[in-house]
Length: 99
Image (tube, rainbow, N blue to C red; front, side, top):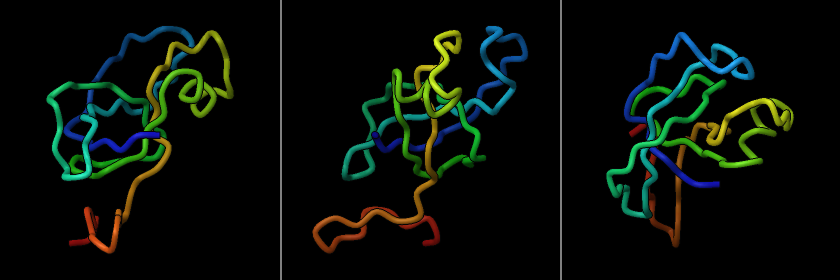
């Protein structure tokens, strides 16, 4: 799993047959300081993450399993599997959704 920040959403009304019409999030992976390298990624989101929220994402076969139970006909490579409320490391609060 990796931590990412939702920076927007993607609309795609025409999709591969293996993909349902769930929300697509535009995310950036973040480091321990909340910084990104600028790379953008699209993740399937069945949880309803909002812009600015930190999320847990999985990739590859883990994303396919999380999204479709592992169907090989599902072309999903990145999936939101959790919306983060708080991140603590070495007694330092790195992120708090409510502050």
